[in-house]
Length: 63
Image (cartoon, rainbow, N blue to C red; front, side, top):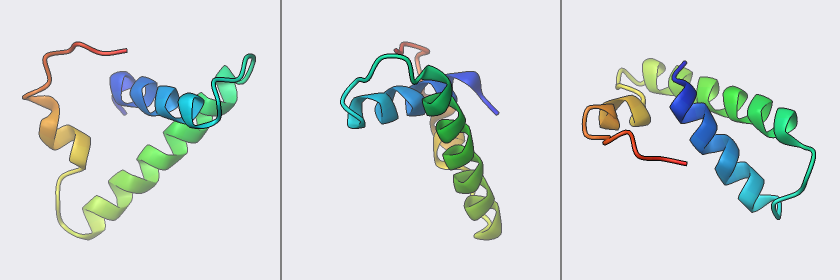
C-alpha cells in the first residue's frame, strides 16, 4: 500500500478527531484499515482504487 495514501488518510482522520496529541499510531492503523477496505471494494467492483487512479496526476505534493 502506498505510504503517501496512508499518510494523507491518517492526517484526515487526525483533523476529524480534533487534532489530538499522542494518537499517531491509532490514526495510522485506522487509515491502513480504511484504505485496505476501500481497495478491496474497488477490486470487487472491477475498478481501480480511487487514489491509485489519480496517482499519475499527483504531483507528489502533500502533507
